[in-house]
Image (cartoon, rainbow, N blue to C red; front, side, top):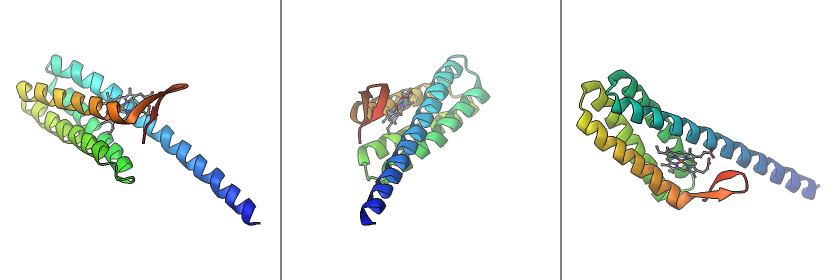
Length: 132
Ligand code: HEC
């Protein structure tokens, strides 16, 4: 009985972990698309569009931050927070038409992607995976 229980628990844990990874992938796809759109809209100086991209990035970075907070992975939490704060700042700068500030924010956001990917992303058999 105990053995069956243990196996069931293991299977459930595996399913939950896989679901979390899928969710994480969805966030990264959202972030990838929003950041490409953001760069395009900042280049074109399209205020409302760039502001919307910034808001979407900030909201998704917040989900990413809380994911890493659960395991106290402080460097990943910090990178997600940097991305979040820079995206909020970019949103405000785009609304105000402050394109110099927006360009600085784009750099900070890109830096956050690179620093977290360097530490916590690795190539798996089929695409990228999380390195805890
Ligand atoms: C706090 C950590 C962190 C930050 C910040 C971060 N990423 Fe990621 N990213 C990851 C990890 C871990 C993976 C690997 C897991 C995966 O693919 O879902 C990943 C995977 C990806 C992928 C591949 C998704 C796939 O199909 O597997 C893309 C695209 C991506 N990130 C884009 C970005 C961009 C663009 C930014 C910045 C605007 C960014 N990420 C910021 C951690 C991060």
